[in-house]
Amino acid sequence: MFKKILLAAAPQIDTQTAPKAAFDIARRRGSELILFHTLPLGRDPWCSFDDVVPCETLVKSAEKKIAEFYADDLKDIPNHSIRVTTGTAHEQMLKIIHAEGIDLIVMGHHTQPPHRADRMWGVVDTTIRKVCANVFCPVMVVTNAMPDQGEIRRIVMATDFSTPSDSALCYAAQLAGANDAHLDIFHVLDVGQATPNPEYYMQNMDVFIDKALDRMKNRYSKALDGISHSFHCWEGVPYTEILKQARWQDADVVIMAQYSSSEDHAKPSVGSTTIQVALSPGCPAILVNYRPRRCI
Image 1: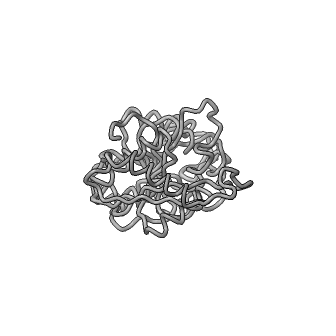
Image 2 (image 1 turned 120 degrees about the vertical axis):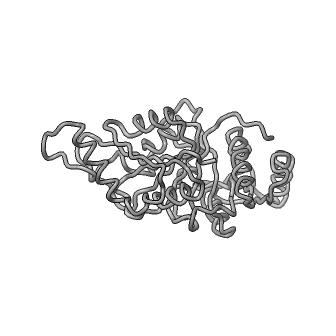
Image 3 (image 1 turned 90 degrees about the horizontal axis):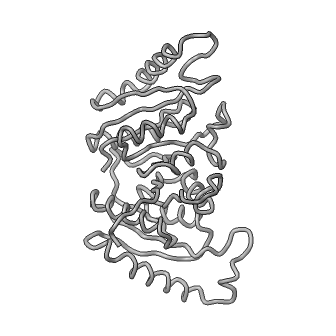
């Protein structure tokens, strides 16, 4: 796993947690690392558009600045390259992802207002959403720092029992097995954020919790054979409970399914739970797009 990693090298990011995560994983696993950046029309911190210059000159200038900025981190990652292109960010990124056979994309969120609206995260029409909707490889969103050297020992996988969640569970099991990590499978009984869910009116919540736990055991036990794991369930607002579970378990990563089959491509996936978890302070979130995986 993680043989070829693409890092979105965005200069607007205040903290360098995402690059550090990509560098640590690449070192630990001897991965090939590609640092990618797209120069838009307008202004960009990696280069200046004050003068009319050839596109090739701008690209070379940005590549040089990126190499200088990350020189200390890249000196012990021999198999790396820097790719700078011009155009729409997600379109250019997707070209490299598909052409190079990337198996992990690492991106970070912005901690200060960016210069361009298309760099904002948390809104619907974002680069991260467009990339996630069109790739099979997982996307790791890093807000807080990963453990040193990219070690993964505890994984929280959030499921809603959908087909994409089943696919994400297979990926989580594979990742846990490869890292000898403990896997916590977690389901939240959604009580409703704006208005209460009438399904749970005047009901004994323990009955619903026990049913969900039995459902997880029956559905996922085969895929988890030989992997250290546990099942958890309680009620609440999904994204807040997932964040709390990851914090309480001291998880190194959270894994969630990323829907992409909806005809409404402007709609955030999983009712925006995935995006809310990924953009909130906490351990890195790995968003797994659906692809057929046989493990259940």
